[in-house]
Image 1 (cartoon, rainbow, N blue to C red):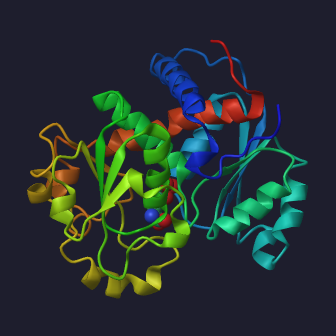
Image 2: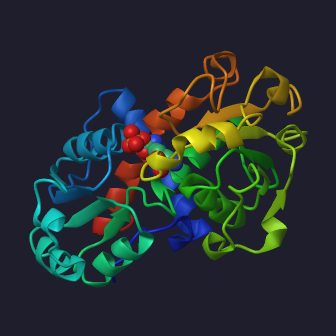
Amino acid sequence: MAIKHYLQVSDLTLDEYDYLMQRARIIKDRFKKYEPYHPLLDRTLVMVFEKNSTRTRLSFEAGMHQLGGAAIYLNTRDSQLGRGEPVEDAGQVMSRMCDIIMIRTFEQEMIEKFAANSRVPVINGLTNQHHPCQVFADVFTFIEHRGSIAGKKVAWIGDANNMLYSWMQAAKVFGFHLHISTPKGYDIDPACVTVEAEHYTVFDNPSDACVGVDAVNTDVWTSMGYEAENQARLKAFDGWIVDEAKMARANPEAIFMHCLPAHRGEEVSAGVIDGPQSVVWDEAENRLHVQKALLEYLVIGKVDN
Ligand code: CP
Ligand code: NVA
């Protein structure tokens, strides 16, 4: 099989996602029943982290272990990447010693350069522009709770960040519509928008964006790498909290989604994130299951059982 990377949501087709979700359901079911995983994926994953992580590191590391393989953690501080080794050289070297690589970094350009020099598949574990593994898990979670996402409406309330750009790509792949509301000065960056305007609608007022939607989604107001803007963002995002009043404008069956980590009292009220409409813990857990299906698919291809 030709090398396939997963650098953004649009790197896989709807058919591939359908296969992967079906496979992830089998993998999840077996995990819950303590059944052995097969076929064994006795290979090595290298994980490169240039930013902090709890969920991404745990889900990839535990997932690879459960598949029968090994995961090696590298960070900027301990590896030569932190001392300026060219990304192209790192791609050449690392990919000769393992079977698949996951990278969390700042610019998407870095991961694309790395992948262009890699002999093995590369997975994006978050960049400033994309977070495809999380949005894959989130779409899987939506479907688990509410069935097909095709034709549904999903609100994005808050920052125009990596999660939003991946959700925009998902809207096109899976055929749903996004209602986007971001504060002035923090609007979507046309350079990061890769889908046609028919897949989303922009609202000035965040409450209006929630009307009639099937899911309300938000994320931190200050993403990793933007910490210097935190105070300015707290002011600019005033009014963009997802609270009970905004959830009341959505469909009664609407779910609340957040990739975590969360800040109660900023982007979401405690009542919403800890309330009955919230599916945030399932989103986090599903990272493990969908990524195991993804690792298996990228390393060995489709399997029958
Ligand atoms: N949602 C997510 O990617 O979490 P971490 O930053 O903890 O990996
Ligand atoms: N947008 C957030 C997501 C964290 C998982 C960030 O980039 O920090």
